[in-house]
Length: 94
Image (cartoon, rainbow, N blue to C red; front, side, top):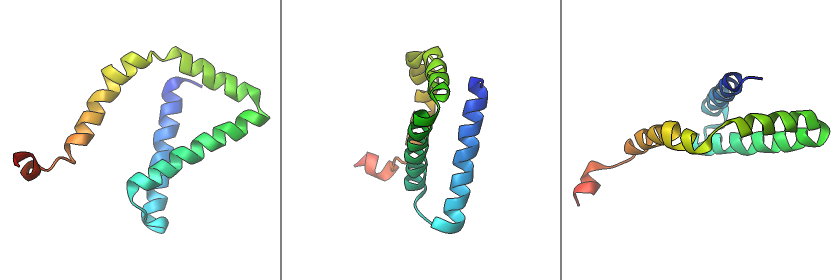
């Protein structure tokens, strides 16, 4: 699997779980996405017990990523942008 395909699957899965949360669970979105992360991690651990090829494929894909470039060059800007939406200007003035 290519890295783009993996990211596309993860984003689609997150959107689907958010839809299920809005329609049925009615939990806060942060909690439901955290549950998705926990379930995905547990699923990968269980899959690793039954198929070592899957675990090796994930390991190979993760070694291809330069994490310092990924975090500082790509992810940090999105995290800062998302964080600025939760800043209260009146609280900053105090």
